[in-house]
Length: 293
Length: 279
Image 1 (tube, rainbow over the protein chains, first blue to last red):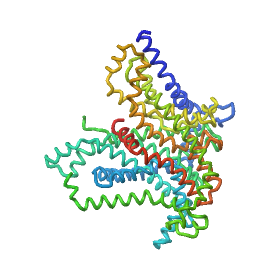
Image 2: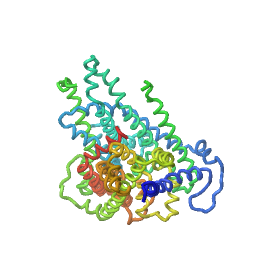
Image 3: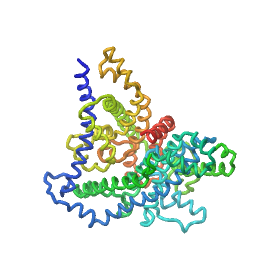
Image 4: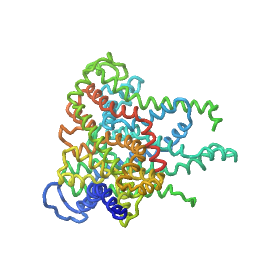
C-alpha cells in the first residue's frame, strides 16, 4: 500500500471511534437539549408539542425556586472566590522547601482526592444535631448558645455546605498555584533582587504575571465548580429543607427526573450553560493581559 | 529569598499554618474513624473526640461491608476505572497522533469539535444524554458510564499533543524508510513514547472516575451495579440512623481512594501540575 492511500486510511480509522463517541454523547445531546427546551416533553411519552419560549419565560420569571437555587450557587462562588487570595498565600509559603513541606503538600490535596460521597457523609456526621462532633465541641468550650441544626436551619444550611466545599476544593487550588509558582525561573527573582526590588515588588512584577495562566484555570474551575455544585447538597440535604439548599444543577435534575418536565429542565440546562460561558468570559476579560506581550 | 530561611517570624507563620491545615484536614477523618470503632451505645454516651474503647471492634465494618455491598462496589468501580483508562489511553493517543502528525482536509473541523467538548461542562447536557443512553440500550449497564467517560472526557488529548510535539518526526520517517506502516509506527514508536504521559493522566483520571457519583447514580440504578459511591448512598439510605455503621461505611469507602493517593501521589501531583502549566 502506498503511504498516500495508507495515510487516508489511518486518519479515518483512528479518528472514527473518538469522533463518533463525541458526536453521539456530546454534540448530539447538546443540540437535543436546545430542541427539548422549546417543547413541553415529559421524558417518556412519544408526543411533544412546541411551546416556543414558554420554558425560558417560566425559568426566568415564574420560578422563584430556580432563582433561590442559583442564588445558592452564587454563594458557593462568592465564598470560594474570597478564599482564592488565601490559597495563593498558602502556595507562596509552601513553595519554599522547608522540612515537612512534602507532608504539607500531601495533606493539603488529600480532601480533593478521597471519595466525595464519603466526604459529604463525613460532614453529615460532624454536623449531626444530637451529640454530633461540632455541637459537642461547642458545648465543651462553653459556647452552647452557638449550637445549631447545621443542616436544618434555613439560614445556616448553605454556609454549612459551602464549608464542606471549601474543605474539599481549596487544597487543589493551592497545588495548582504551586505549579504556577514553580514554573517561574528562579533567576528572575535573583535579577530583581540585584536591581533592588523588595519582596512585594517581586511578587507584583514577577509572581503575578508568571502565574496568570494558572489563575485563569483556577477561576474557570471556580465558576464551573460553583455553578455545577451537585454532590454535596445532593448527598447531605437533598436540597432541603424545602429547596433552601438546592443548587441549580440539582434543581434541574429534580425537574427532569422527579417532576418529569424534561422541556423545562432542558431550558434550565441551557440557561446554566450560558451562565458558565458568560461568567468565564467576563473573568477572562477582567484578568486579560493588557501589557501587550 | 535565602534570607527568609533565617527569618524566624516567617518560619513561625509557616509552621502555624502547617499545624492548622493538618488539623482541619485530619480531625474530621479521625472523628469518623473513632466513630467507626465505637459501638452504637458507646457513640451516644461518649464524646465524639474520645478514643473508642477498643480498636478491635469490627462489628460496624462487618455490617457495612456485608449490608453495604462494598465488595461489589469496589469491583464495579475497578472495572469501570480500568476500562475507562484503557479506552482513554488508546483513543486519546490515536487522536493526538493523527492531529499532530497529519494534514488533512477536515482537520480544522475535528479540532473545533474537540475544542467544543472542552468548553461544554460536564452534567449540563445530561438530561438529553440520558435519552440517548436509553434509546441505544445502554441504560442500567456498566457500559453507560464507561462510554460516557471515554467519549466525553477528552482533556488528555491536549496533553498528548504537547508531548508529541517534542517527539521528533525523524523517528517516524526513519521507520517509514524501513517500510513500517503507520499503524506499526503508532504501535511501536508513538504509543510507547507516550506511556509516561499516559501513566500520569491515568492516575489523575482514575481519581475522578472513582469519585464520581452523578453518572453512576443516574445511569445504574440496579443493586448489582453499585459503585463505591452509590453503594455508600444505598447503605446510608437503608440504615441512616445508625451513626456508628455510617462511620464504618464512610471509612470503607475512603480506604481505596486513600490507598491510590498514598501509592501514586507523585503521579497525581505531576498530573495536576503538568495540566496547569502546560495545558
